[in-house]
Length: 369
Ligand code: THG
Image 1: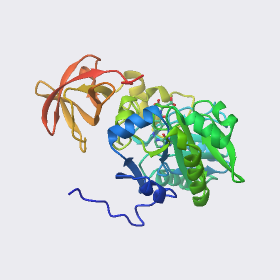
Image 2: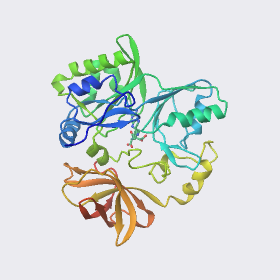
Image 3: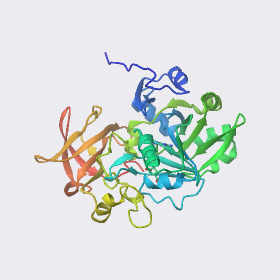
Image 4: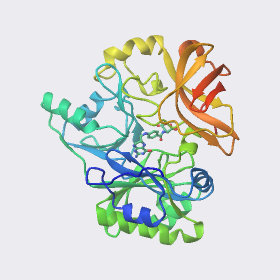
């Protein structure tokens, strides 16, 4: 028998946990000390449904760090190499967050409300302590909190139709990574066109426990004939799309250049951020290793619970951190970190996974366009 997870106050439930349970969740992970569903029917059945229909995801674990006050903009610029100076008040940016050594602390989505108010929609690490530490040490005029915001993602090709039914025609005019307030039961909720899949969709930043439940119920009522289902970020689909998972594919040991996020970095003179000195060299010379898409031979693969060695002959040249069988490609797709000398597309390598050695080949992200 598989062990189960003992849930307590430390592993936080969400406004949607009862509904997610009723919808038949079969596996959870813990993310930001909170429950995150990983499987409902099966990884593959969930995958096909996501690619053809619409799903509602409880991604409450995408916690918001709220910055409010006159130093908000200065503070957020200090933690990221991405230049935020041109960002509009209705924009979201995917931002690498780095420490003084240029190591990645998180890869959140920054949501700008105004110069003086931001949300940082975090991946799985306790980023709030780093941010508070900087603000306190620099005596900045900013309040830093984790508000009772619980994102619900609406993902899949029928997301537009469902959102139109619940929030009206205006919601579908939202552009990618833009946000706007929409009224629900007399309360404003931020909605953005974003989400951790490549199938298109939205994220609703439900505000307050009760309001979240009401929005969940409306989405399911209006979506019945669209075959709306409870879903969750899907391992196969996110690998196919090349979406990185912090803590799995990238850690504090990696720079944004190694993560393939160099296009989001400007360590020049334009902006000042912590870690700029450390990143300068890599911005000029490039990293010594980098994230790569990998095909692995075979027709099934165990879960990658710790990194698998990638070898060339007898030399270790990298590691695999995420892998899954892709039903649409009929191949095993994987995310790896590969040394510079071996990272070219088309290179043939080998992976040592728990079931033995397997041939592998470097390819291009995204696996599925
Ligand atoms: N949405 C929100 N918060 C989040 C996530 C999210 N917090 C946790 C986690 N996901 C953070 N990680 C990512 C990783 C990838 C993307 C978003 C958050 C993403 N990337 C697009 C891509 O790579 O194609 C677009 C990047 C861009 O061009 O700006 O969407 O999903 N709220």
